[in-house]
Length: 420
Image (tube, rainbow, N blue to C red; front, side, top):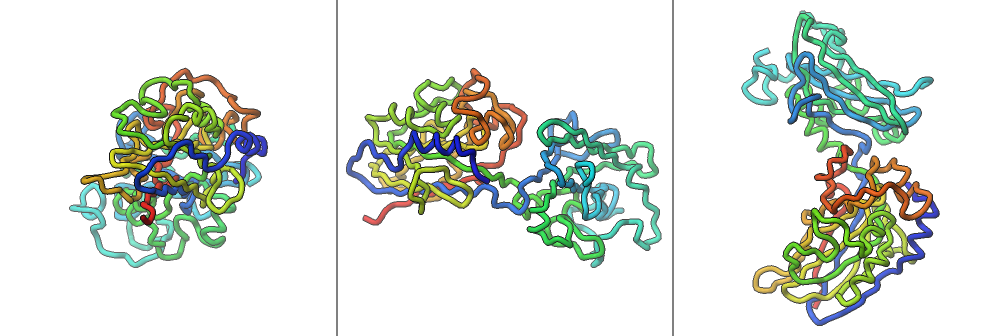
């Protein structure tokens, strides 16, 4: 993945690497911000766990349905799996080829078992139930579920998996749906002859499908494939060392509008210049040159930024870096920053990713991550997009309806203490 040349050029013109505005005696720290996004085996995948009209994750009863939105391009296919709850280990899914999205292209069953993964091991292969010779009668798949695909704009599809078993011989719940959009790249990762989730006639992969088929639980599939990964560059880091701000943040205050001091330019266009101007009297800096590079530029997946500073007991670190595949999102800790010292004034050297959130600057209306025409890699020029007139808040609280990966699957923030 690469950015439009115009965006890279604009970024290089307004920043320079490692500018330190102030310095004072104290302990020397090094902070490394790694871009680990897009490292999962499946990037275009997810789980639909909340039935339509529901408030929480759970089964879809007869008459209920799951809906989710996918994005795809010509040649892509949809694979999905959901459990037939009234069974030991049966699930609904297309075959290994998936669904083409474009033209020319018992007492040990889940409702009654005493606990998950209960029942005798079958030691068999994955196969259609029509091929079984177990003496049991099974309903036809289309008597239980109906799958509807509704195309939208920019490669989007709304997928609705509806439970239509109410009039069948076996009315049954269905369980949360694990889905993945397969492309040629996915095929190359998994091996061309094998399906992503299973291969008919072969033993189960050990990827977590057993947990979905037996217990309706997709979490093992999520963990195995690392589906939270979303590939994005991050743009340069501006940092500042300060005291405990007690809710009055250096860059922003959560729940209040942007102050007009430069956060908008950083969050929308990756330019920290104006924000750096507002910090001239503080111990701050900008790191724009990725580790191992010679010139400023974005940190792509696998790259990192590192910077050094000195701090004294009581000091905290705040920083901000643009989430490039967005309109105005940025990574940062909350207003209090990251504490650099613990009890007795001992410096803290730890992985501090857990103190970092993905924030919405509230300055530009959000579009779907990675697709929006007003986002930096695709926009015609800086500061392009509809004004949001909103407040700075965690993107999880913005209610924009889009799906975002967890911060821990996008970046890793490590604070270390330099040798004295």
